[in-house]
Image (cartoon, rainbow, N blue to C red; front, side, top):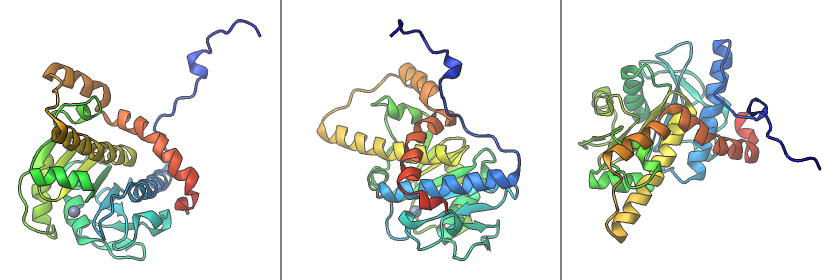
Length: 261
Ligand SMILES: [Zn+2]
């Protein structure tokens, strides 16, 4: 064998978010990513009864969003099960009802944040546990620094969210950030792609688990402000989230390809 020589970097594969020529292609793409994210949430055990929703803004009718149907397991969802909901909460495409909480919360998030393509919320176990403490995530690991000074606490709880005014208050608490801890309720994350919103949720849930475990075991060493901000600059943008998420997308579409049907 001849001596190994470096492969030119432009010949090495590196996946980046795809660009689409038409709204139809973009819509199909977002729906595929949404169904895959829901399957992953099911695989990770983020379901609690009928609670939990991920939304994706429609690329053409931008005050409409695609969402999982009310009462259907995340683990079974296919692209053709997804429903399209308008700004009044009416289902305009699909065969199922919309979860009222999904509309009340997500419609206000999408309205307040034009940069947000997708929003994810579920009653995952460790997110709920952190929310019960009314605490934020602290800079105790490299991964959690993605959320440093970039998540908020909705410091209120008034019951199951069914009205838009409550959704507006949650959107206000979220502000310009990527995530909000809903006190006594759970986590909510947003992103400029479905993949980014899903990744933020998955890694935030794990960071809640790590923080609770570390603080139960002892006194975690905090990363200092400069280090935490620097790390957030490296890991904390939506493109980094998209890149981190691709192995999960590969896993779920290879093992459950029917989700694309
Ligand atoms: Zn909820």
